[in-house]
Length: 371
Image 1 (cartoon, rainbow, N blue to C red):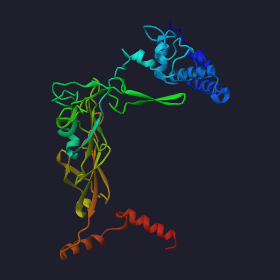
Image 2: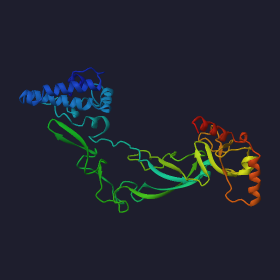
Image 3: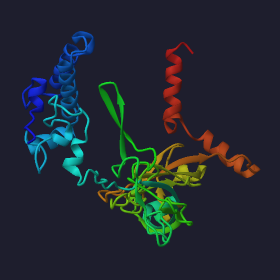
Image 4: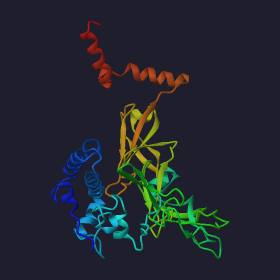
């Protein structure tokens, strides 16, 4: 009859000991029972094996949870004999027998866990107008698909994969290093637990083939460069019944010839004539929704910012609508006729400094500097 095993008792710690307390206890005992300290004593050697096996389980959060769930009696069906804690001649079989084959598998084989498929990424370019209104885009990408010929088994038609003889279907092998051992992915089956003698000709035994995929995606209003849209279950297929991964679409908004975006506001630089700036005018300016009228106040200065409410970008979450800000540049004429020159001279002669406050302030500063 296999006996109950108290892994915490072997390391001399309580059941609620922290990971660090367990580690320190293990190091202390491993040093105490090391062959260099005990002179090769057989009983000390068996004790060290028990210490190593107990620490191998308790240092892993997942293994520790499984052990705590089953208690000292071990896995259903009795004890930890298969885990190396049975009643052998030395009271110990091997420190790294597959304890979790009993917990997770049947017949000595570990059930392969379901794993989600890999996520995929692609980029989609849209115009600024499309970003403002939202758009439906066709996205094309390549992904792995279950092979249609073999159904994902990797075996040729009429055959099926065999259990890997190296790992006996567990997908893992143990490499011993003195009193320690390391679990590694089986190099022969690459962790699948199966080998294929007659591989499928279409997928060369991989069980997957690369195929082009095309889907339609709704890009919401308000997106900007750097925004990513996630399309669930459009990634690569999962392993062992796991779900597909997701597709992440990275948005790139193309530069515009007239508009520059700042958050939800749209900046547009609009030139106006000198008379329009002096006298004021109503001008037509472009917006993301078509042309719109803008009133330019009399006396508008070069570089003035005029706001057009609600004509910017929508917020991505729909909370607010941005504005369009018109950056006014006053264009000075470079070619004038004789009459135009005469009129401007007349204006200059009949205009005092009060009409030019910026010039007046500048002159005052210059006088203050001794100019």
